[in-house]
Length: 122
Image 1 (tube, rainbow, N blue to C red):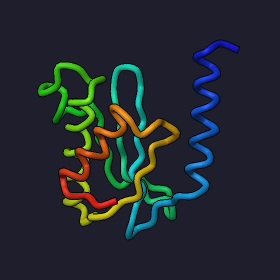
Image 2 (tube, one colour):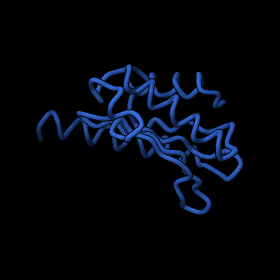
Image 3 (cartoon, helix red, strand yellow):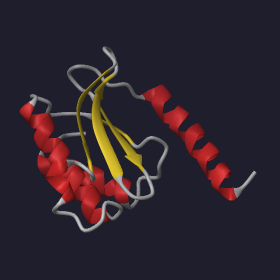
Image 4 (tube, rainbow, N blue to C red):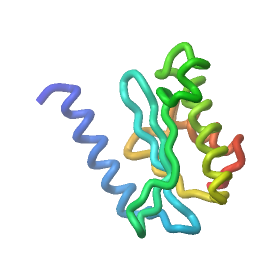
């Protein structure tokens, strides 16, 4: 097993442990973060109905022109702020943060800080 595969397996185990403990509801949905090599994605999910309430990524049309790169902490913070704006438009003020097995550091932390700066509480 390569190092890359080992990291992926370890993250999936960590993700499973986190997901067993948290779940999003209509009143307090789950803010999920996915970090790829070139971009970052965030979405607000209602797990009771299995629907995505709003989503933003670094390749969204609103951010694509503004960002030089989609894979840095500045892009991640912008994604968090835009997601908070979209969530507030839909009447969502508090969420549960799901880091999806990633360590709370770097881009994942920047998304959380951006969402908090935008007005979401978690």
